[in-house]
Amino acid sequence: IDDEMEIHEDLLKQIRENPRDLNLIVAARRKDFNGGFFNHLNIIAEVNDGLEERD
Image (cartoon, helix red, strand yellow):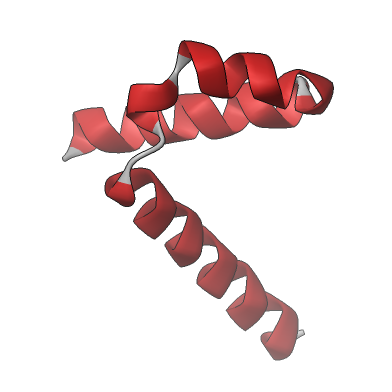
């Protein structure tokens, strides 16, 4: 699981640092855009929403 999370975080970092290259990132890392990645993304969004509500 830790290896998967590291891959997901690396992918998110790559997207954040190169948002204009999203099509290239998707083409190169298509296999990494899987259910696990989107679950990870959902968890991050929920945590961020919770932090905003708390402030």
